[in-house]
Length: 84
Image (cartoon, rainbow, N blue to C red; front, side, top):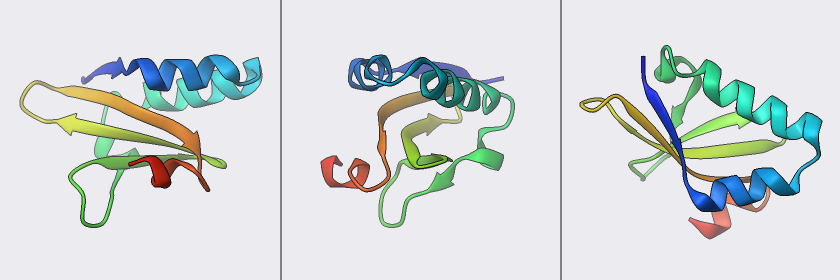
C-alpha cells in the first residue's frame, strides 16, 4: 500500500471547495492507495501522473521505491495544466 502525501497548495484548493466535492476528490485519491497505476495516468512528456475525478484533476508524483504518492496540485481540468 502506498502512502499519500498532500502538498500545501493541494490542501488549500480542497479547502475552498464545497464539502461534497472535497469528500469526493479526497475519497478517490485515498482509494488509489492500493494500486495507483490502475487510477493514475502518466502525463505526456512529463514524469508526473494525473487522476481524473469528474471535472477535477489531481496531479501527483508517484515513487515506487518508497511507496509514496505525493499530490502536488488539484484543480479544475481547464486550469490545472496551465500551472504545471
